[in-house]
Image 1 (spheres, rainbow, N blue to C red):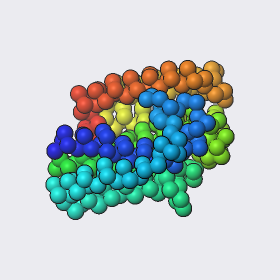
Image 2: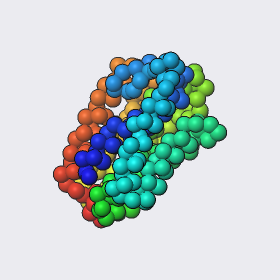
Image 3: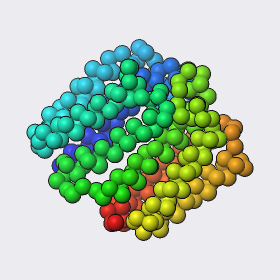
Length: 250
């Protein structure tokens, strides 16, 4: 069950989430220099995107049927909720992705994978403190992408929290979330390693916003460097969380 769930989250669910995102961000992606690669995502033409909704449906529906059969109606409702969150985020008349600051708050949808995992594997629910931390992490990660995309988003008239507040204020918001995460990880989970990791990132962002880049945009090479560093940090932090199990200890 675990491996089947991992397969689902790794491709079909990602295909839904980022497929719908690309389908509805064609104009913004077309003028975004950091897109069009494996690191930051696709830059697809409308012709390339035609038929994508049908393909997503074909990929997702068998898994919904399988997991409903294996885990019951509660799992069915959870999977339908996952799909609906992505529809509300991407499509009119809702299109929450252009209704700041709600496009940040709806990132809590990523945390539904925790509910999916516990339901599929018949496990106890994670502590509410862990769910709060995961939500904050999702907020912070989304804000980082918005900061890098301010110029193309403005060019395509896409409203986000970063385009409304500006780069410097948005960085300060991200800094606040990072410091809060570091504090909560230490206070709730007594995880010095993860707390110091988040605090180190916070210190870097502090120097970034007040002394280094300030309100200046990053160059493409700098964004790629940050992208590799963030992915490496994510892999290392996942390995630590899996090995330590501290996010389960409250």
